[in-house]
Image (cartoon, rainbow, N blue to C red; front, side):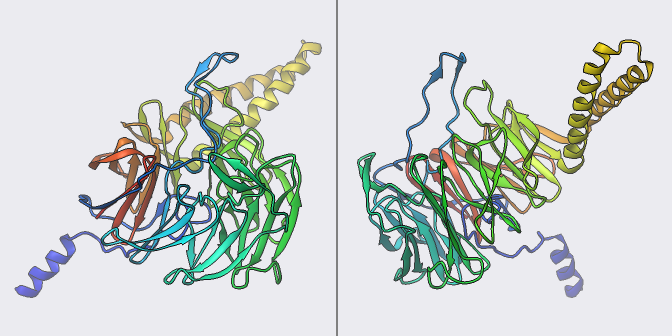
Length: 457
């Protein structure tokens, strides 16, 4: 009887999901913001780290309004460092500071500082943690590798000997700051040194152990008329580099050769799906509504746009996005395929329409034009079926997913929703706007624009 009771208890309990690290910005090199770790439904605040000074962003925000375009509340296209974003491995929490120019390590259980490693200028993106080492860039122009436990420096590297600096927001920074973070993959550490488009920029891949541009897949390429800023992304064969006000660039991963840019895209909020579709912001600030654009990373062609949103999460099947006042789950694979078909049909229909201007009596063309219109109408009616649920929700400032739970960072609040049906499961107050959300080893870590890091567990 006892054995049967124990078996029923185990079957009734929650499924076991292993704890996961969050070793780099937005979890992985595709910047997905998605972890397999499932946290309990109810969390309690364990500790709060408070910086005496809020983060000092690299760039000030946009103007309040654009008189020429007639729109207000312009989107920031270079807002890659509004909070102390964190990474976490085991019982350690790491973040870079734009205030005191250091990388900090906190005890994940208590929030107390273990150590700090200082550079000569701001550290704007969190360190990447792998193989017992931390990799990060600084506005002093160097990429660094240090020991994750002792903070002992292993190497530092900058691509050029030029030591020119310039004042910026009360600090001295290199003319070639490292504001891309450091992406580590396949034994190489990738990063950019860049700021001004009229100065040469550098994209580097160095040996992750030695910090030298030597060995398979290592390179140091000189780039012109670019400004590399915001976290690099990686697919199997390409690197993607955000530029802020200009379109993201695509580079061959093994050589650093530039492949081109992503059209109709911009900003520094980017994520890459497993099918190599790049999701990013608009290429200008003139649109009245927030918008995310989806492009085929392989051939760099625009696929579709989502109006009224600036945050999205994508897993193997679904996309979760905010439109208007609603949070929505979208069965994305068939939706994107049908949208792509619709776009191609509309283009073909437009060409036939031009032909009909000079061939008004061509019945075959008329029939083809009508048939395409029929299919476009059919697709439009089908698209709504792929939106699986929709709920009212505050507009996400930060957005992350752990297991089957969506976490939304808002202004003064963080919330959790069941990803299968949108049911609200939990909420808690935070100080400021919750930009950075991390799910790691039984904890939810929330970074805000006031310099706070909240830990819930």
